[in-house]
Length: 234
Image 1: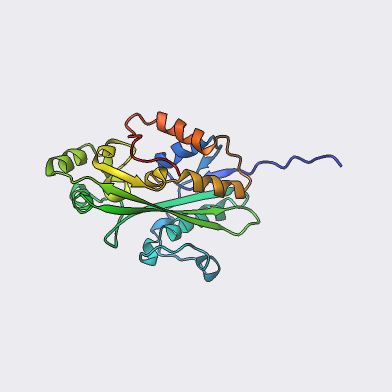
Image 2: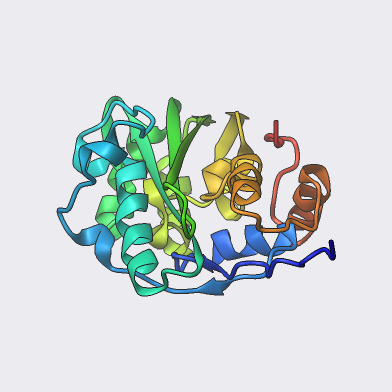
């Protein structure tokens, strides 16, 4: 019997984050970007989906997998023949969820809270593929911040870098100097854990051109401010 080549499904990234796009680029994945505002809606998955979601000790509305499900399910309904990858990242310190700061004062509050302490970063992933049940994963990394001076916090906020990032810092940028150590996936702190993403894409038949180590090295080289001593991909 003659082999039939099955077409590779279209992958859609349900996120406007340039940091997540850069990680997919490093993986050598072909994809399109579609943005959903469903994250802001107070909708929740039914028991069929919520029962198989990983547990994170935060309010249900803040659960990163629930947020990823909102974005992914919205785009999947609009593009039923595509594979949809959605992600959402939160920073948690002392049980408080730190989202993107609303202004400079909010960013300052977050950085003062994180100063000299260890916090957790969770990225929830949701994958929707035709004729498959949705798949969900969550990745946790722990980040230890240096003790930050008032001048360091003020100067960093003035750069504008904190304003579109959960927890008010971007570890792949200038905030790398504020961090002492990372335990777990480094790219998870950025917003898209490479290893978990490869695993999910493989289940949907999406080809990944790069190995984990090769993709991480390519991504690292593209970020000249990145401190290579902080962490690696496990």
